[in-house]
Structure formats: C-alpha cells, structure tokens
Image 1: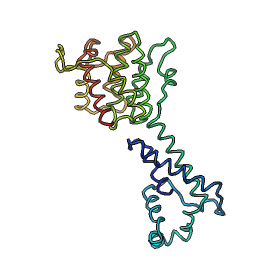
Image 2 (image 1 turned 135 degrees about the horizontal axis):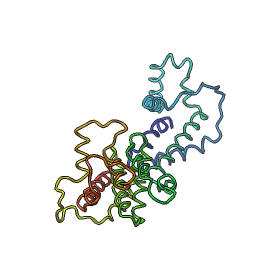
Image 3 (image 1 turned 60 degrees about the vertical axis):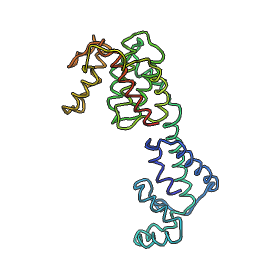
Image 4 (image 1 turned 90 degrees about the horizontal axis):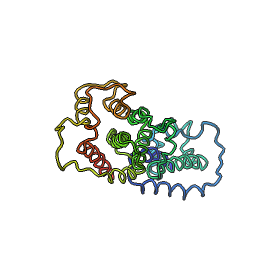
Amino acid sequence: MVVLHAACWYAASGRIRDRRVLDTMVDALEAVLPGLGGASCAHGEGEHPEVGRDTAEQATVGIHLLSPGGRGVYRHWHREELETAPLEAWLCPAFLAAIAREALDHLRTGRERLFGLRDTAHLDEALLRPDGRLDVERLTHAVRFRCRDGQAAEDAGLWAARRFAAGPADPRERLVLLLVACWSVTSGEEAPPEAVHRDLRAILGAVRTDPAGGSCPHEEAHPWEVLAELAGRRHFGFHEDPYGAHLNHLYAPGEYDTPEPSFGAEVWGCPRHVGERVGQALRVIDGAR
C-alpha cells in the first residue's frame, strides 16, 4: 500500500497510456481496504509518517517494509529518525487505510479523466457568445496556454472538434474549429489521453481531404508552415502567439487586427493545407495509440 500510494500520482498523471495499469492498482486497493475496516490507532497528531512529498523515498520505504531483512536495512539507515518516528508507524492499520483511500480516490479520478468519457458540454457557456457565435479569442487562448493548463487545452480542442462535427453553417467557423482541433493535438509535447483522442480520431478521420492529390497555387506558402518557421527563427514572448492571433482574425476579420504576415481565407482553407493539418494531428494521435 505504501508503494501504491507513492506511485498513484505518476500513474494518474497521463504518462501511462495503458488503462490496465490503473485498473490493476485500483483493484488491489479495493481488495485490501475492506480488511482494514474502520481501523483506529493510539497515535497522536504528527506521529504517522509524512507521505506524498518525496514519492521515490516513500516507494523505497515500502519496498524495505516487504521483508524482515529490508526492515533491518531501514532501521540501520534511519536510526536517528526512528527515535521520533518508529518503523511500526508505517504499519499502523489506520495510517494504511488513510493512504489507501487517498490513493484509490486519486486513481479513480485520474482513470476517468484519462480514459472515461470527457464531458465538454459545460464549455458552451464559456466559448459561445450570447448571440451563438464563437468567442474565438477564449477558444484559441485555451489551446495557446496548454503549458499552463493542459486539460483546459485538451477540452477546448475536443469541444471544437465536436462542434465542427455538428456541422455549423458558417464556413469560417467550420474552418477555424477544425484548425483549432488539430492545433490542440499538435501544440503539446505529449499526445492527448485516450479520453480525448478517442473522439478526435473519429472526427478528424472522417474529414475528407486529399492533401497529396492535385496541386495548389500556394507552393510552400501555407499559413501553418510559414508561421512555424517564423516561430523557429525568433523567440516569442509569453504573451505573443504566432497562431492564435491569425485564427482570431480568420474567424472575425472585422474585430481583430490583421496580423503579419497576413493570409487570405482561401489560403487557410486550401484543401492541401487543411489536409496537412488533419494528417499531422492523426499521426500524433495514432502514435499515442
């Protein structure tokens, strides 16, 4: 239980892509907790070990607790600490029940966030204006600051994809929603979890594009490639963004200043350009799968 508690934070962080790992951890904790029941103890406040601060050290303690020899090694290494925090405190049933419940709650929540059905309906209020049009700046802001709130960026991208799939009549809105959905996948260092990419894969995979076929008059001047090259050549400040400002203007050219370099709506909507964006997003998703 000590090891499972130490590992639960990493397991639920999104770095583990196999649901069976979390399922097995949850099953183990669910099986053990009833045996502890309403365990109580005579320990006072602060007499139980501190957990969750140094998970590597905590896992090491848990491994030592597994055998008499390991406990002997622990006692040898921590002689001074044992004067105030006896090793037996790690084995206190009330303490173990408390950390098991905490780990179980965290793993269940993380499993649902990573593998469950991600609800985005609540974002209608945040990302739509009273007249039903997009609050495009809020939408692009959420994806743009993925480093600050990864789940908000994932939810915004999934919301955009689901709204795109619903078929809004405005062609500019459809284009921006699709580009934002693709951007939400490719903007981070890690692909979104299954709870997000499951629907994204279905929606983006149904988009009919033929980026390899035919030709277009734009050569290598498609917006995303130009902006990516620009971003690679200069350092953008924290409040600057080579993508969001362009998407805001693309959706509402009368409300947002024209960013430089500027691109017409026909260039943004070029089938080859859109196909490249969708194809890149699908490659990231398929790599995660």
